[in-house]
Length: 540
Image (tube, rainbow, N blue to C red; front, side, top):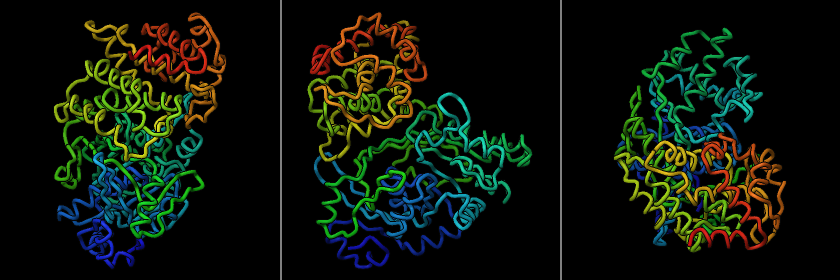
């Protein structure tokens, strides 16, 4: 069986092999989409194919909409060239359930794939035509939080951004610059309304996208490269809305075990491709069954009825509460705690970590005892039920091939939100004491120990990618495994790091946690086996 339009004509072969197939006329859907597109998505990676594309598939199957999605990739063009187009934009979603059952679904809702490259006239002209069409209702995004960044960590404009600010919308090189140029095409065509919907896993994602796009409109208008009216168009929520959202679905890198299973089912060409930009992409994605998408209902040109397939539409305030519940307490902090200590203890599987008595206790205390008391119930999802599912079903799922090494990526960018917000809540509530936080500081200390890139046996390991590694690792390199410094010595050598609000969300000295973190760090570097011993001591 081949994952192509022609290869799917023998539907009986696919269904007998256990695959669920699209239940709609894809040719008709494609024609309607090309003529009157409603939904374009930027960021053609795994989470999109496992979640948003499947939402559209379910809508199409149930006759709830009659157009598909146009997928655009603006970072790694080879995803389109080597994975989407060779398979006629089809993909296979493999849902790995905690009870051991597996669902295999052929996703056909993506009916066109595009390369977001302003230097490619054919591709960019087609994207401009999509944005110029009054029918377009929304553009969704999964480009990662880094995709919205306009500045370096030290506050300087990125070179591509600075160049685009000066050159204007004709041929921008930066990601958001290209998106802003497409919005300019829509403005020129008639200033039609549209919703720009970030579904990236980061706090205030809609605000981040809005600020990034607005920066281009402001710079271009100030430099006389576009009319002032374009800046006003972007700033008018009746014309261009930037809804906030909270997304949650664990979608690991395509696993070798899943690839093998698909081959055994008769599917050909399942091999993954590693692009020149080091993206690992396959014609299939594997993901957990659980999924949540909560979106601010701000769509000035209408939207598909996605609430009929489980999407929760609500207010911005409620989205923010749900996002804080998930990112600051009920999932992301637990993931990061397992990532840091999993790397240090030599684990290569998140689910295996949940069977470790100390690590299991670590995440339960962080979630239930330290985090849950400061969570505001958003009303649409119950925090206690959410965390119960995370701890008892989602993270322990033995069929999810997720790794601490993947989750440990960009940890320096995550600590401030995933733990710092809880610390701030304790500081702001007179009924709570920061001194009662015992295991959140242990994760801070664990990250410092992780930066030494030496595991609990004393063996070196490779740190996961992080934009601040080159900055923070040399600071921690002042210590070696087996050192016995005093708390004062640790605080002195790590002062700039421990007081870094951007990393920890708070100044750990001002918050009263620097001493605790330093003491834990001393215990963690005492020698081989010290990490296990420290975990046993504080989770007993």
